[in-house]
Length: 245
Image 1 (cartoon, rainbow, N blue to C red):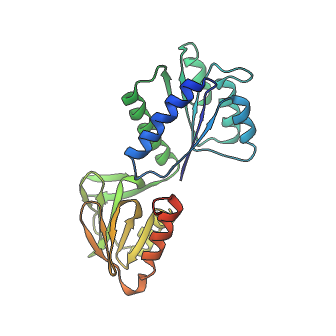
Image 2: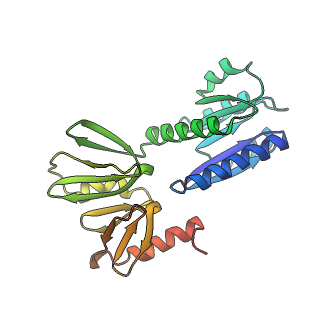
Image 3: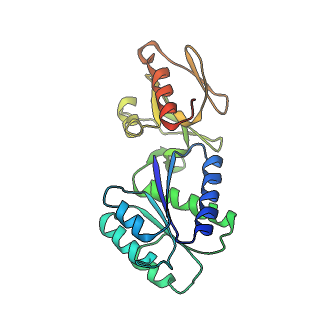
């Protein structure tokens, strides 16, 4: 799950930005995003005693502790999270570098620009937190972010990675077993092994049959007897995400 905190002391801006975020979440069903909103920096700082977020969207001009000060507190606790500043003032752009902010956007936000910046931030966060899979192909090394991988199949000592954009990347011949090669994927709750040679990203499952699973692009994979629990694992995952009522 990707946990996002939004903090803005202006209620109108808070509602506008959270509205954009909810729209972004609907447009990206492959992402599992949780959003918490804070109307003051004090509330956010208090929450940080027990909570931790992957991405922070912070206003700068806030009473008590401004966004830059909050950013320093966050950085003392977490070096991997992403910080984005959304503010009406350009005066703190240089200061934002002190907390390694990924983005500095001026209000009123342009929706499309905000969405692009958010996608870039999530991609960068995925890379920095090792949510990626490296494949050697004839064209060189390919770094694949987990959230763009639909499935990985092992056939005749090669990997075939089916991606969200429609591409299927073929690896060079490999000596390692599929269990070893797929281990990094299976550490992430999004991925499910449904046979000795196939791992799929559950966010891209379109339908589940008694002995098959079909991806959103229509690709159908058999679920072998050894992995018959896959269907229940998928249902539990969807229930956890609130996608099955």
